[in-house]
Amino acid sequence: MELFEIKNIRVVVKRGDITEEDCDAIVNPANSLMIMGGGVAGAIKRKGGSVIEKEARRYAPVPVGKAVLTSAGNLKARYVIHAPTMKKPAMRININNVRKAAKAVLDLACTHAIACIAFPALGAGVGGIPVEDSAAAIIEEIRNFDFSKCPSIREIRLIAWSEKDYEGMIATGKSWFKHSPRIINIFFACISQGLSFKNI
Image (cartoon, helix red, strand yellow):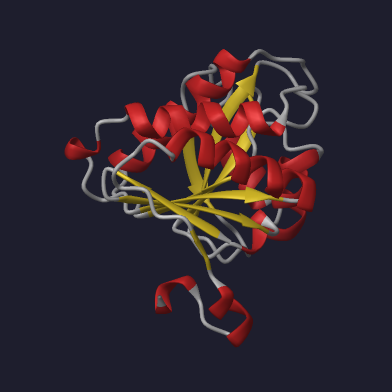
């Protein structure tokens, strides 16, 4: 696990299963039709229950650049933020769609006073975006976001499924944050002792 900080917001990069995150909200890189088939969306539906998809589809179609909030069913999170990166399932996308989706997530989280958000690598599955590029786009939107108008957001997590993806996210985070006077780059060895992030 690595921690970076910008604008007093903790940005945590970790390897894990996003469906197990206990943030206020996890992000579903959706399609505009809100069909939760494969990839992250499918995993969220399988573990959280079909109620999540049923709620989301009430809002369809949702354009890229907008996001909707639903309950999280059986998940540990309270909510799922569905942010389309593509119009239809299994479309190839460009990096601008990732930027738009990330910005939409932050805007919606602000509206609902959400404190902690967990992102997967948006568009890195069937969308065809490299994990490093996805992470860079999300981090760019975090850096550009006006958190002075959104005091609720305190922690943003970037969740990598594989070790390779985790290493890519870490490298991207270091390249983006290395010039910031607020940077913190810590490996939490104490995690192995059973301490959670909240204990730090």
